[in-house]
Image (cartoon, rainbow, N blue to C red; front, side):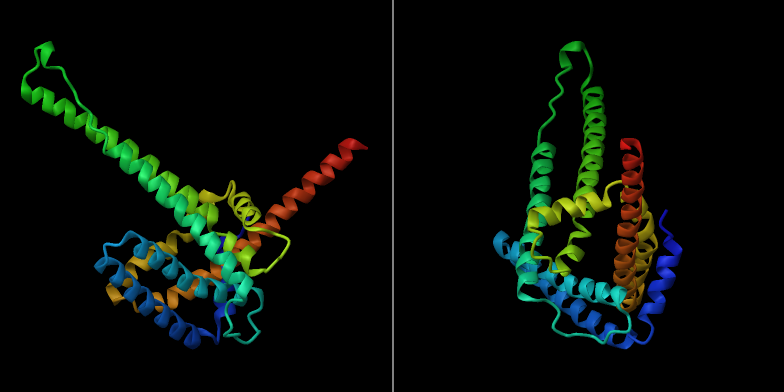
Length: 255
């Protein structure tokens, strides 16, 4: 199994001596995302909102890439040339696929939720109050089920895409976007609940940082990004070890 506590301890050590630079970068990213969010609220154009969504994820990818670099080699000095040309293209396509899938899920569930449930039981002798009560119960139950399925679908898709960014950062020209998506979903397979448990403390701290007007987030984001990158590396090693064991068993059986 993956040692979650050791990952977080390792991440704190790797961040030693880098906090000041990372806080400045996080501050710049946070301000940029704030202005993007403010602009998206002001505009009613869906295409512009979609472009702003892509742009905000690109900004988040800057801190994701820095976290990945630190997790790989904490002693290496910062390289401020964050993305190469090939990375930018792959990131754009990857983010686009991710957002399109999420928007498709949104549209499907909006259409389902907008379905009117008509209950015609007046002919059975029920009074109007009973009819309204039964209708309300059915609609509440229906909405709860739909909301649960919706949240599960969004979490499933978002977690499926979460490790694909690290594959893009490796700049392997032999792997196309479809393979990256497939690999990302396969890496997280069977570990979604474990990963949610892993990020739970970060989620709680993120909510608590609201009370510090977002100041706590300037430190938290780097800690989260490096920890997430280390979790990805540990998960890859774990899966590789399991695969090697399976191959050894298969080779033994085939002998």
